[in-house]
Image (spheres, rainbow, N blue to C red):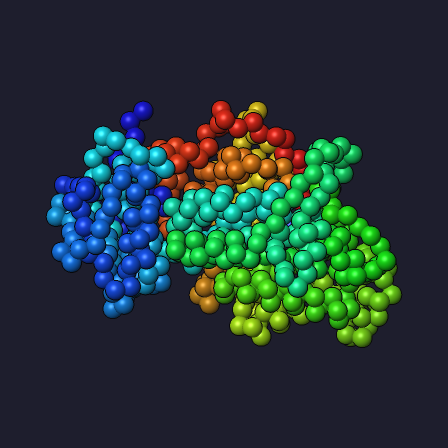
Length: 525
Ligand code: ACM
């Protein structure tokens, strides 16, 4: 099949692209002229192009490829850039370093598709087509969430995950670090969290509620050094790592390590081997709050992200209703009942983050009012996003029907069955509705953007992660970066872009020959 020229297959599509005649060849003689502040972008360009092209792109004062940081450039925002390529050279300019990093990804996409290969490629002329590009993202939050709690992934794979995000100009890597089935975040003050909470004896082999188990132990956790290295690696690519250590539900792994955190300190629980919503939640005594403040202190120490996610989803209140201590706590706090301990707990954690200068992010739940300072991640219903934006919250779209990549991609035989009745196909992702229907620009401006989510109860390998993520994440990246292209235009460009995914060995076909897709089973977590 004839592929479109790379400049016609950019994903996400830049705001303005004009093609010109001619091309500029990158070869062994090409030098970079790098102005102060543009060094990181120059290094990234070299790092990304070296494996396939072998180009060294050394610095020289008269280099024909110019990377320039120019704070006087107005109108490009934090992440916009301008790129001019003519037969004589190339000029990449931005007002902020992050804009240059986005422009580097465009340069990479303008080259022949094989430039993305991780192996040396011979016999290809590394030509950049002459173009004039001005590019600015529409949304500031362009994210991708990976659940490393249900199935652990080592840091070398997370680096690749970040690289694939950065290729698509995504900028928030939401790392879901803790859940009922595993605690992956190192906390020096409480080593049992990873030593005990980081392992489970086996995993449920069927859907939530099934009585079949695989008999295979599963475990893993990160060190602080590894996570710091990941944060630095991501920053070099303009990606912020958003950590999530969730409370007050989804904490069974923490309770296995520290029974004193629960509503019944005498009870011994294992790290959960089931899927579904676990009814065990945190107790509400002061020492529990203090424990999780310490956890958050260590999270903040490792992750410089201005935003920190504290979970808040799916917290059954039955244990609190049964617990005299929790009922007494609710009464002492003047709450209408134990159910209100859910937002109360979140507010305590949010306050701790705010006092440290960070911004709490919380999953939206039905009937759980949140402090206005919380950024709301809307996952059940787009109506939650609208309501939250109207109340005054910042909002990130993460709705399950449009952005959950663990749901089936289509109706094909090789697809996981997904949530009963729900297929999140490419078109559904592309059609994600990001704007609240409001004439009030203040409300609209509170919608920061959107992100894809991959929950991994039934996803164990990098190949399966990527099969489910691509090309759906390409569609989401397109929508959050620009979003005005139209479906036909996007799918035409995606045809060429798939050649990039091939060059990177990302499985994206339907279904890929190398992946056997285990059954995905139903049940909202
Ligand atoms: C979620 O899917 N429980 C946020």
